[in-house]
Image (cartoon, rainbow, N blue to C red; front, side, top):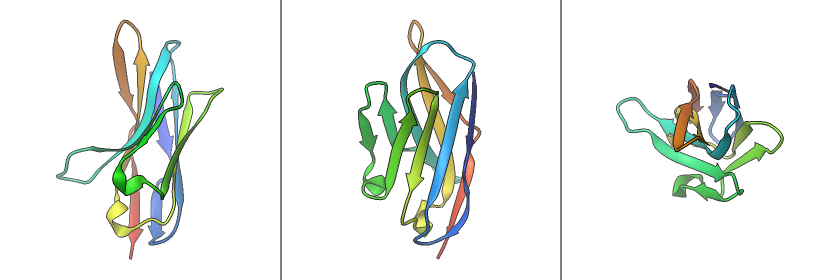
Length: 117
C-alpha cells in the first residue's frame, strides 16, 4: 500500500491550505481516513477523521476552521485548513485504515505546515 500526501507549505496567519492524500495498492475496504499532526518532541495527535459511512470527527482545535472530505470514487481525502494560526505549525500526516481480517493502518510520509505570525 502506498500513501502519498501533499499540500503543505509556509503561509501567514489567517491564510488557508489544502492537504491531499491518496492511497493505492489495496483492494480491501477502508474503515476510515484521517489527518494527524505532530510537532517535534510531542505526540502525534488526531486532527480529523472520516469513516467509510461518512461520519466525521474533529478535535476541538479543528472545529470551525478545518474540513475533512473525501473523493468517494477514489482513495483520496483532503484537509481544508482555514484561518491558520501559528500554533497549527506541525508536520501533518494522513492515515488510512483498511479492513482485512482486522484493522490495517497506513501512513503518509508527512507534510510540513508552517504558519508565520
